[in-house]
Length: 100
Image: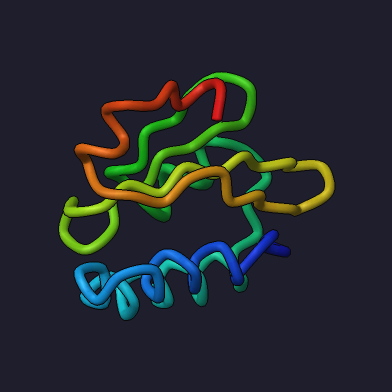
């Protein structure tokens, strides 16, 4: 899979020393997703059982033992993952995962 964009993820943990603990978990997800061949939401779910599948290709991943949330939009036909949001649960609760 191609991921757009690693810079968004790096900006998150670089934004504040408070989020430094997320770096290793985010990079583990990133490396796994790069090697993945997700053809459908069920393939994502088989790799990440705790992922939440939303409508229209959106998926929510729990990062760092569920401390952070990562929302992506996946274009399964083109094998591209677009990073839409990374943040704490508190930040996640303030957004609409389908609209971000």
